[in-house]
Structure formats: C-alpha cells, structure tokens
Image (cartoon, rainbow, N blue to C red; front, side):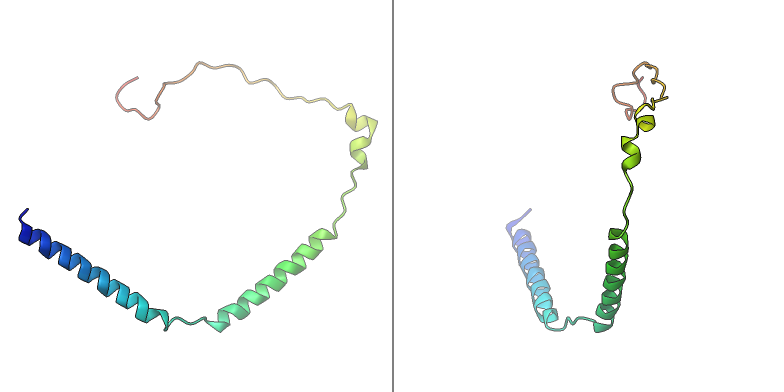
Amino acid sequence: MSNIIQNVIVVLGLGLIGVVGWYMYTENGRLTLDTSSSVELEGEIQAFIQKQNTLRQINIDTTILNDQNFARLETVTQPVPAQERGRENPFLLGED
C-alpha cells in the first residue's frame, strides 16, 4: 500500500474518532432520568421488601430431623452401571 493511501486512511480514522468523540460529548448533557420509571421501580422495591419480610417470618420445625425413625431411614438409590467411554473429541466430524 502506498504512503498516500496509508495517510488518507489514518486521517479518515482520526476524523471518525473525532466525530464520535464530539457526538458523545454533546449528547452527555442531553441525557435525563425518566422519573416515571423511578416511581415504578420504587413500587417494585416496596413489593420486594414486603415479600422478604413475609419470608423471614416463616419458621421451619426441624425436630423431625432428630427423630430416631427419621435417622434410621436408608437410601434406596441404585448404583449407576459403568459404561464404556466415548470418543476423545465428540465434536470432531468424520473420524471415530
């Protein structure tokens, strides 16, 4: 690529960066907070706090865990039988 073309590309790139920077700088003052959405958010926060307080009032009776009948329970799970291993790379196409 010749020096002239490189210089033109660099100048255009710097110009583009300058235009984007200027646009972002001028838009910074125009951004405002929509107060209607903050009112909705405040209502959602209050609903969350009410649900949290309701959940905090729940008490779970754990005395059953200390009961002898519960302690004698045995698991009825079955062991998983061993299977042969698959391919090293299952995503490799065309070769097994």
